[in-house]
Image (cartoon, rainbow, N blue to C red):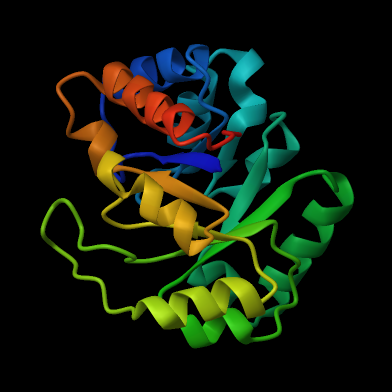
Length: 210
């Protein structure tokens, strides 16, 4: 089971300290998504994270920074996937300069998982799988459709939305490649303890974690 932590969408003074501690406690993948920050601010965020953990970070914007930093990968949003020469050229040149970067994207409709894509994604997010813990979103997927997509789309799918410790067994049973942690970590009084409990639950269920 791949465990991915999604960052908060806004800047937060304590987030980087928490993420660093989570890295030290076994977090393998952190998606850094700050849609409103500048390139300079994104660079400052990366510089504030110990360099030995940079290869666990996937950035959602300012992809050009992947040329300078030894990052894990880049995430393609809708704006990155709009057909234009500029976007095409950026993807081509980044692919040449950093061929080992993983590539990810997000989907909110099952049917889009079956589409042909110009990018060979290492995994994709599908959301919302469960009603969000914040109460802002409700899942609109039917279990049969999710299972069919996991089995037939040929795509490694990460469950996103409403993921919490009591959902781990169901996520495993549905056949998801992994799960994305968000609110269950950031709204916790003790994010490190919450992460340890998730790892412990996976161990209890005999779920290998990556």
